[in-house]
Image (cartoon, rainbow, N blue to C red; front, side, top):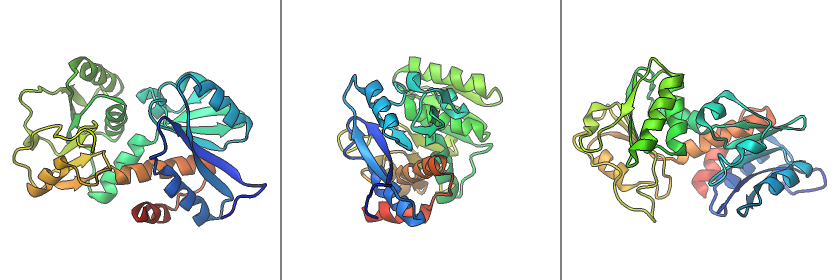
Length: 279
């Protein structure tokens, strides 16, 4: 689709943002449903966030995704937050509605949808281990709490951050047994679901976030990293028989949620996934 005088736009802001795959599948989505929209990436320099949001709003931006390092910095600039963004204390999606900026967080929803579709795994009533306590871990932990996970253990090098996440989940989901995992004695075999929500395993940060012992085909090991497509963590888990999932489908599904928020339409997930796979 060629841009013209009636073309609307949405986009993603962050720094750096040139590596983002979001334009690939969002533009494929707009084309698939026949919307005269274009999706762009905006690299926002430190200290320019407020001016940039004001400028994009004034230019008629229809919606934005927010990536690092602005998922929390954006909050004071928003008029309202949905329940999930409020609980996570971060927004990855902005809806421009009637002159107001509404913050959403679709990361957790994307994670849950990927679990259910890619592993046929329903986390309700399950026992999960989350490795990490940053923004991604918060989103995933809140999403698991919302769907009724039985227990959560949080493993993080900074035990203070892990304890804060435990208190957050406990305050919202009192029926969930949530606690800090003992970094010296975690048995991976004791969980239905293991999630790496850290950067350990990326090309510039190789290694294992957790040593894996005996796993079974009934266990699901999820790594939110999507490049490389198979981290060492996933490779070892697969060799031991566990189901493994990388972060590419989480990226896709959270983007599909954002698309629907902006447009009010069902996202053409198959077209979006095909574009992502081709890239």
